[in-house]
Image 1 (cartoon, rainbow, N blue to C red):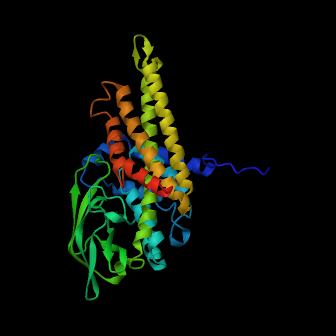
Image 2 (tube, helix red, strand yellow):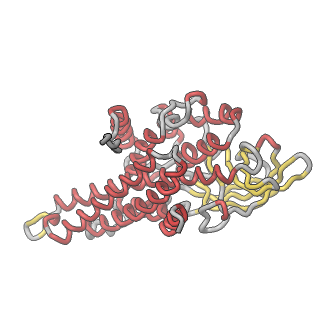
Image 3 (tube, rainbow, N blue to C red):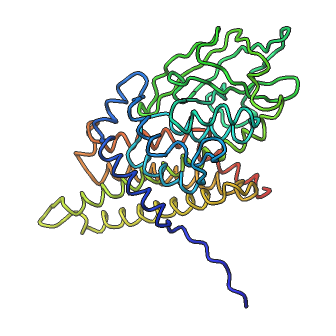
Length: 378
């Protein structure tokens, strides 16, 4: 009998080096005090940190060499995303490097790729996607905005909600319905009729904005790719974003698990470490099982991003499992920490807010499971 190929999630030596250098950099440059500082700021963006990440090669990892990137894969990017989740990295990395870059890679013309992707790879460009108009926006069907023609111009009117780091983006890629179907438009941040308003949210470490288009006029060059081509592109981008967020969630959940275990080992009551009590021991064991399950699902999804059929299942599975694992880990860590954990000043609450916010982003657990059901024909 022929040997069955074995799937492994073990990192290569090069990927492990990437993990170590990324973790060390984030521990040095993004301590909890810095995360709080960014959360309290209006934009949550530090240009020096952003440029340092680009110099480390984070932004260019999954961009092909012919477009100014390093030519690696999503597997390498996944290492950075997990570590960013572990440190609660504050900045437009997902919106720029995952969402915008892949919208351009999948849907843009070759000329647009050559024009736009090198700036992302070098850290010179911050971009985001403005997609949905309702509080539960999570798919193509949640886009109602129409781009109409006026002479030789496209005219956009409408409001987009929950736009990640909209206030710092130099270009906003938005989706609107045209006579040819759903289309993507490249909108400069200084376009006439465009306004961006900060929105306070539960997770202040990941800024969101409301973007209003009031008669924004754009030429045909503003179309990303062909008119009417955005639907399938958006589906792929949302799946990639789900995987990216799942990887972040795994990193955050692992921080929570480590924090809870360390406290259980060093906090003594009745002459014993609290980790020796059955209730705490079982809670931590359950947390570890949940986190490892999420990590397996997320890394599997990261390794099949080029298989569109497999991704129909892998992406929503990863986002669903990681969302539940992270939120449970953050909540249970607060319980294990006891009185200390219930103070808002403790860092665990930053992770709890990130866990709750990310679980809802681009479709919560129930939405992800509906996608799974659709994928297997239920």
